Length: 294
Length: 295
Image (cartoon, rainbow over all chains, first blue to last red; front, side):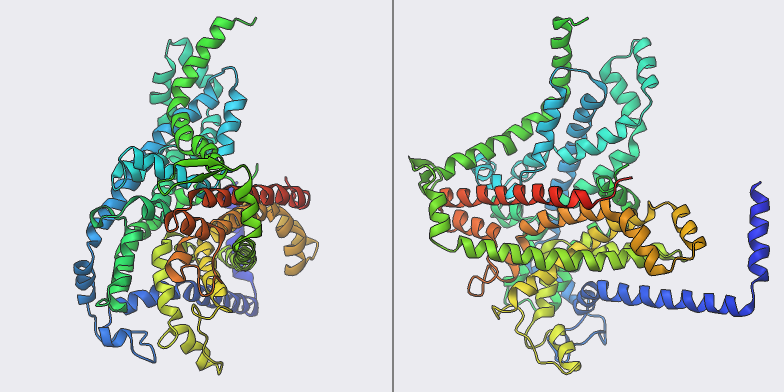
């Protein structure tokens, strides 16, 4: 059946009059033009930042603005690295994001397992309790949380930056959705074979849910890496600053011109940009999970 | 059939799995929510310890003294400035990103880029674009014969300017979500519309928009919540100024608590913010759910 269809479409397109083919070509050309223009507008701030980061200090403050550096000046990157311990900031953000990601995968997958495979009294109430945490804005709890971290002696530590985010209701829901798609017979067969809950969880549920786990990983990492208010509150030494807060060191340093500031911006954006390119499919799936109602 | 012993055992098992999450939620969400409310009913010392019970006095103060009313107005205006244009532009981007062309994946990735530029980075880049003397935005304005704008320092423009950054930052997320909403519209619907001779505008209004309404609804709710909680761009670009023109509630909470050490007053503001977000979300559900078309 399939080959016939293919042959059909090919022969049909061959018989199209030249005028139709031309107008199709023109329409597609126009579409590419629109896409290119939109891409340019969206990307302009980033492209311009990249250009400025490669300009000399004089070019970066020149008027009219210089959009394409006459010569590549890599020294602003060196300058940025000297002005602020940017690599240290990136490492900090990386450690915190990695810890939060792993933590969320563990806590959320365990909770999601309970909600999808265990039958216990009060299940729906506990489920609502999870649901309600998504309705509470983080800002509302931030003052008591600050005191909690302070009393624990966790200001300026990795624990202080990561522990409050080790559980995620969003992650639990996402994984629960995925776990519920696993066939029920799988569970029954495993039980008959005398497989306990935890072994079933580890050897069957987790491996079969790899895509969903990947989505949660990309999402959690990105969200943590991009945090701003919490790290601003709980860190105050340079060695513990995360990238988002550390960047402002470049902002307030009088010696730093636009070019080294933009070099810093580009440097700290590289990890997340890589994540976008590598994990785009996973990310899209994760972000749209809640959007499309089946 | 009911065997209580077995029920309790299953609850025990479940708690082993739910425990880690429940522990974190209790410590960092449930307890602080109650604590915030308690703080708002007391006066506090500089270390945040409760001094004296004052009931709802702080709440009365919020609405009668200071500029909470104004902050609330700024917050809602900021929300309006960011949510509506943000969704319209994203819808347009998602529409063109849904064209079936070779290499469209590259454009989709480009449209998603603002998502991975963190708020601090985005703010610094836009700070450069906003620069009144050498900035690119004024350069373009002059090119087309308009006069320069003092983007961040002019109270008439500053809220618009920080909104611009927030809109740009939101484009990535909104476009991705709307695009996948567009992709989930069954192809047959378009084909039958074509057979019926419907033009692109008709098709969009009668098929795409209704089928997209759940996704639009989701994007709308998330955008509103995000806008009500915006902080980073305001802290970096304007610090709430000039003349309080960009002091949103979250910024005011931050300033009251961590600069003025007025923790109870800040907590009362936080509780009101929670109620505002809660009520708006309920209202959105109530008003918009009816217009949403679920398959």
